[in-house]
Image (cartoon, rainbow, N blue to C red; front, side, top):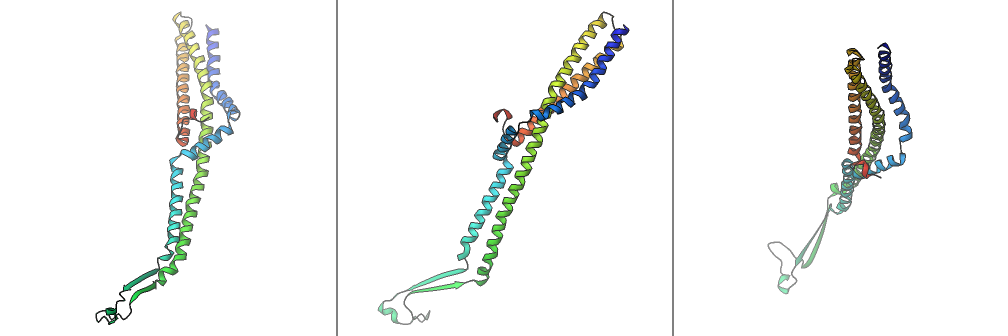
Length: 233
């Protein structure tokens, strides 16, 4: 009885240490599992598909369109007018109503000095708006790239944690089944049985939590790529 109790104590001690050791091994394995080629593909997919980045591209196009409109509007300060007068013989008489004494076509040009002088500053402002839109896009490019890297590393870490947690769960399950049979045969005490049951439940909880972390990390990464990771080769 004491020998079995001592064996159980050693197993529980091993199980209590398996978590930290597994995490350490998982951390060591992360560096070897990281594929920078695949990471670059994830970044490219995010830059191609993420809607927020597309909105920045639309803002740049809109700013460039505004700049083109301002450049074309150089003619706005100038006003052109023309009047056509009949040159028939009877029209040689002066029109007493309008006092017109000229016949044929009459052309007039007027200039708005204030509007004309304002054009250079308007064009300069439109160019700055284009630059601002481009800077915003470039800044978000960097932020998006950093976000993809961070979520990819978290995904790899969560992925590598699944196997140790599953192995620890299987060990705890097998040990619990063995002790349960021994308890039914009255070979171990109720305390030993309860300790094995608690260890098994803890292993199950840890396994479910780590699996949930893995799925969450995968979903967070796919949020940026807008594609399933399986579709990115």
